Amino acid sequence: MTSEDKPPTTKFENVASLMISCLGLLLIVTTVNLACASCQLNSTRVTEIADQLETLAPIDDPSLVAASPQSLLARAGFKYEVYNITTDDGYILQLIHIINPLVSRNNLRRLPVLMQCPLLVTSGIFLAPSLDETQPVAYPSNNQPLSDNPREWTSSNRSLALFLANNGFDMWLGCNRGCDANNMGLDETKASPRARANYYSYSIDDFARFDLSANVDGVLNKTGAKKLLQVGFSQGTLISFMRLATTDIANDTFSSKIHTFVAMAPVAGRMSLSPLQLPLRAVVAAIYPVLYPIFLNNPVLTPELSRLVITVTLSLYENLPGGEAIIQLIGSLLGGPSLNMQFDRVIVGQVPLNGHGNQLAHFAQLIMINQAAKFDYGPIENLQRYNNSLVTPKYDFTKIRLNQSIALFAGTNDALAPLDNVGYLRSVLQNNVFYQKTIEGYNHFDFSIARDNYQQVNKPILDLLIDRLAKVQ
Ligand SMILES: *[C@@H]1O[C@H](CO)[C@@H](O)[C@H](O)[C@H]1NC(C)=O
Ligand SMILES: *[C@@H]1O[C@H](CO)[C@@H](O)[C@H](O)[C@H]1NC(C)=O
Ligand SMILES: *[C@@H]1O[C@H](CO)[C@@H](O)[C@H](O)[C@H]1NC(C)=O
Ligand SMILES: *[C@@H]1O[C@H](CO)[C@@H](O)[C@H](O)[C@H]1NC(C)=O
Ligand SMILES: *[C@@H]1O[C@H](CO)[C@@H](O)[C@H](O)[C@H]1NC(C)=O
Ligand SMILES: *[C@@H]1O[C@H](CO)[C@@H](O)[C@H](O)[C@H]1NC(C)=O
Image 1 (cartoon, protein in one colour):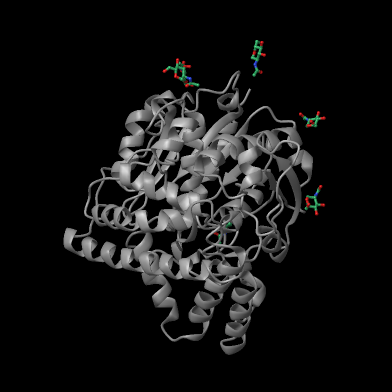
Image 2 (image 1 turned 90 degrees about the vertical axis):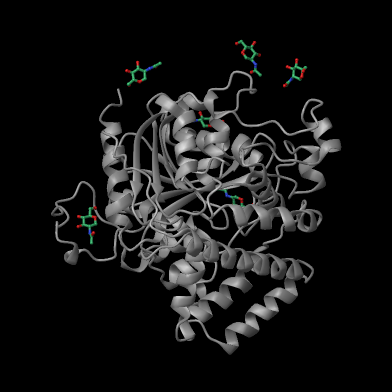
């Protein structure tokens, strides 16, 4: 597989992007404040408000509000298995195995694929795009190859997980602690005192160190495979880079279990000083001291609050003339300017889900120090946790050893994983990277929801994985 490097370009004038990012920040601040106000409400009250809203402005299909990955799979006619896996520190997670009912187990490709999702969504985001036009397809199949004429393309095949499942891959949807609305809880025999004292006392470090390891081991255990193919998106890439760079685990074999790692919109904790990023850092630095005490160890975006916010946006999307344009604008403000995003009600029903206090605070810290580091508890607690160090340890991505096995997919308009962050990653990952593609005009969300993500992302990933599998001994 050859690289497809393109020179980094960005079409947008500095002033325009400055304005856009300021607007975006305003929106973030407002949302966060609203969320905090609602944190003070109890969950029953939030549920009541959501119910009232649904009566006032009915939603076509209320089952789409915060629909679980399982219900999305059932909607598209796929089957699934759910496994309860337990992390080394006692959190119980739900690992979802997608089953294409038209593909026999013996015909599945040789290595399983594990997907890790972004912040503020569940792995439902790998299923939602074009879900209602998607159905199980037999593999091997006699399908004609895709027409070269873009006019003949429909919007189907946009769900990466189902597209791969329709092409013979054994698909698994990973999960971080807190990712499921059911809150699976703790295995008391393994749980740490910290977890027992507060379920929400975790950060992205724990997603990397414990959850990702448990997901990978879970898939290998259930399939009997020795290695797997991994696909991460945004936060799903950050936790992989963190885990791969972790060197203080005795007899660690994690890296040897990853055959290929595909990173979409890769996040390395490093932002640029471009006009898109400077205001973000300034605002985050300003609100951080106020929000930190509220967010610390707090669930923040509870399932009830998610449902309320999604009810409002879905109702807006369906009932308000121009509602769709507003959703498009919000998407461009947050993820970078884009003309590619194609929302539908299944997608709108999936965001925002699942953002917890320390997780959000950790992202704020990464933005402020412009580097991937462990969670900063403040000097006193850092001393206890981090081997007598006042400051938090940094992740050293030059420690990653995945020789010629990482693929990077970046977008020129991505405000959250900007090109110079990807350039930085490329420079530290060095010969770990075997493939890089830069997609013109893509923002952060386009990887999953662009109208042409079949051509730009899904098909290239399929080809790349098939190519990699051909080399498996
Ligand atoms: C997983 O845990 C849930 C909640 O405790 C339980 O209802 C379910 O039966 C468990 N599934 C399996 C396969 O053990
Ligand atoms: C979807 O992908 C299949 C291959 O799995 C291909 O045969 C089909 O033409 C694609 N359809 C569209 C509309 O892109
Ligand atoms: C999976 O884990 C179970 C329980 O630890 C073990 O008995 C089984 O042999 C494992 N399977 C594989 C394929 O590693
Ligand atoms: C690591 O491996 C060594 C040598 O095989 C063994 O003595 C030690 O107990 C192992 N440590 C852990 C934590 O598994
Ligand atoms: C803790 O710090 C000491 C002295 O700086 C060092 O020797 C030791 O390896 C460190 N331990 C860990 C687990 O980082
Ligand atoms: C890395 O992979 C390439 C291509 O597979 C191989 O030629 C090279 O020897 C490997 N390097 C190391 C250090 O393993």
